[in-house]
Image (cartoon, rainbow, N blue to C red; front, side, top):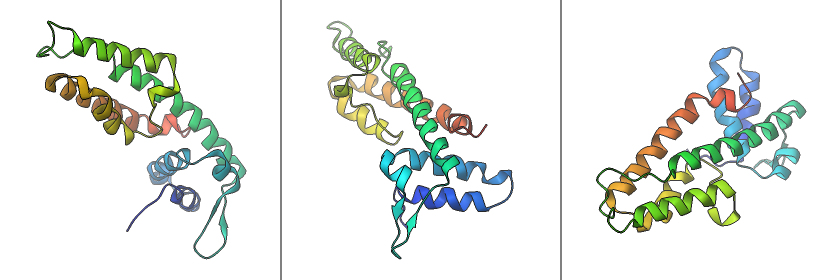
Length: 167
């Protein structure tokens, strides 16, 4: 079975049909998937294989747009935490300061929210972002960045219901 982002609309609609609090995790995941869609798709729906258009309820459109704003804020916070200019204790470039310079530059990019910072839209992109940006870091600092990103993703998912407007 495969899943694409536009399946978030169908998942959200399905979760709305199921009773009980046990659907909250499904709702949070579905809203997260919908937040990866462009606004036009969120508002106008997605074409299904049978030719019908799958739409969100108006209240869920509002919820998704608010969740997108919340996620943008969270991604900026996560980025500044992951890229904080502090190197690993075992950094091999301490003498030259290469890792510290790279981390400082990345941190400033995210803090100033420049398009060139490549702010990931989804948490799945953090790993790729770190690999691409941390290419100049030593192995201990790259591992530290991956650990920071993993911890931030865990915190995000613990707070997902709140971030998605379900709490």
